[in-house]
Image (cartoon, rainbow, N blue to C red; front, side):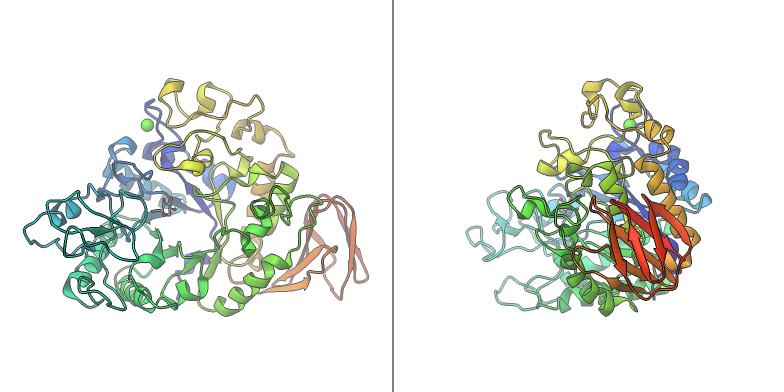
Length: 513
Ligand code: NOJ
Ligand code: CA
């Protein structure tokens, strides 16, 4: 059973280093998030996902955790974070932290201990072979850096040694089974981290690489799923209101492993990518569904989505997102008029949707050098653009000290400029989110049904008793269908309907009651 509060929740993802800097050091901080809670609430988001804000050497922007229980100095103190939970709750906003259970930083104290030649409590907290020249065959590994005569397995970058949750299929003498006391100890250590933050007021976690825990797992990920189901039991008993969203991108598996939500992430050519990022697949040609006149086809999304939706609608939620800190921003290839329709669609589908900071004002992807292991992702991680003051209102520090440079385009969108323009993307997002909160039929649980997905026609769908339609192309389009709704609740562009015929002007969206 999912936490009841998810039914009417829209998440706002915050990359803390780039959101709002309150002490002029050029790096966003927890106090900055507290100051902007009213902005987030007013936009229509009522929950946050904050990227890792824990002590870290920042070789992967904080996904290399050095101390799970300590806020990184650059963001403030644990007390600041506790106060964020409190202030957010006063405004009806929930807060998810980012849990990175699959690996730590190579500077984590557990790993330091694990590297020692002499056996100790942490020797098997990570995955080691038994000899300095023996590689972790089939897995990425590092040798030659430890006192211990062995090599260790990596989970992602070189700075991120894999924590040991055991192997579902043990094929080498150095691999431990899932129920080995050392593998169980890792699991308990992660529960301890979760309990720590939940008991200080956090509302749950976004879980990094959730499918990565147990190695040599089967196709159904039954080893990893067993770990999560065990953790879920702990949550149900001790923190029944906590919510968990997986970075797994396989809702049938993730939701059966006890997650409330799973992201539908962009993978080249998958359904989600075909909505906004199809350019990656067609050597420069863009057939994204929401790109005007690009010849996109909604069925490329629906083929996978509907299968997942049918399979999981009674056990949890699929989470769609505008983008995240790992992808190009949707503004990369789409203009404001295209984004309005894309967001109208995203935020009227079932499940629990996410909005990445700055996507509500159409922040652009920046072509800039890598920072903290970001590579191409760095361009989506630049400071939030608040107004036309110095550093676009992000920080009072010197421009050279900023975590990343702000968009220097003369027409860089800002919250202030978008607030002042009644036709802006920002206002559309705000209207759609307000509509979603006002209509139970647009929220997480209301049924979803496709009415028309014929190429060349508007895409028409039903949510509860409401009828919705979108036409991303520039030409006006008509669809005939048996429907009874005839009162326009909301529209972008213009639409008209009579006697089972619905016409949408070019680039329009409509909700009918
Ligand atoms: C997924 C995170 O979203 C990404 O930013 C990170 O680099 C990897 N996992 C490794 O933790
Ligand atoms: Ca700061």
